[in-house]
Length: 196
Image (tube, rainbow, N blue to C red):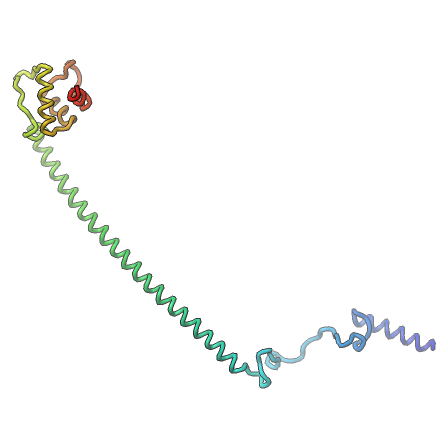
């Protein structure tokens, strides 16, 4: 009996050293330590493989139809994207053409107005700056006018649609002095005289 117990203790001690959970392989109740799988990768079966080791045709047909549906959706999306890009490009081309036309017309208008201004400026160097229908002749050769005469001239020019600044400029060009005899005529002064 002593020999039996010694053998039993030795067996438990060695099996405990070999297996971390203790006991022998049989005592582990079918739970073995993971070891190296000796099968090659090509010999292993996947869950989707039948007994012959090939993928089932049903799964292949289902996958192929899903791939085909996905590709048709992608193709439709690409066609829509191409159409939208073409519309965007056409809109940008139209915008660029419109801007080009606008700036061409604007430049032509500026050139025309500048030419008119330069022609008018050249003509104004020899005559008063106001159009002839607005200008009035000054009765006094020595440019001495009474206050009533100046106010009458201003009101006459206002009736002919002359602006306050045009009237002030014309009075300065004609050499008609202000009522104080100092300084120049200003649009504000003309405005005050018209209201008074």
